[in-house]
Length: 337
Image (cartoon, rainbow, N blue to C red; front, side, top):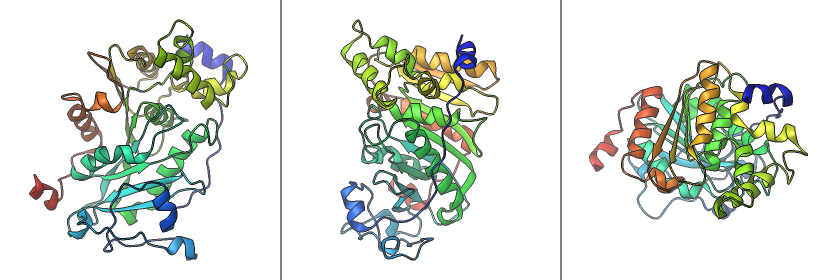
């Protein structure tokens, strides 16, 4: 059925934003609520010589992991001109080039902030990976496909400057929560796969906005009705009947292709983003020979609370490690355990 609808409606198109990788000035970083502690020992790489781009973040008054030769360096960069097109990069300057994990926050596509993903970002940094915790334009800033474009732009920027972060541009994974899980899956299914993308993980991902629209009718729960409204806002305020191409572009199962990366989705059995959304995506990917695992936990927990359920974070880490390869944690991280 998905194939038939996909053929009838067609895939929406999205133009990629121009890339740039420059540190924002101190005032912009502060207003963005930057959760990362910066060290004066961190380098200030910048492809630009303008005054705005050469500014360096203020060092933290408290000890930073960057203070040790083995700990991660952290810094906030802009990958576009909008205030929300920023990302925190955590990297290890020593040892072999490391695979990259991109973390994408949730928030109904209309809210949320990378600062809420700091603990998740830290956990993957402690495993030895280069980690990118990114913000993106919200639905109130720009309609779809701006959000997908932003994630792709951030990925392209980091891959382009991978040497600066001691990272391997040919090995990276996307980890998204709720709306961020939808964005991660949408990037994974964009075109016939993305260069270097080895895996996509979604925690409670609403990969089928059309299903969310249907479930959020007057008979849906309060949360389902809210998700329906959020999906309409993401589509620029337009319902599926009036803007079928936009909704087709947002619907991840419609875009499954043989070059897509393996995917993992985790849901609660009774949450307002039901597991069947990811099961639809799994079926579409199976048709084109791409593996996907849908893991269902008992209960109603959604997104980050679900990730904190016993065993969930560990299983996700194991899945990502199996696709990116194991990286020995830095000496400092081991010493802190």
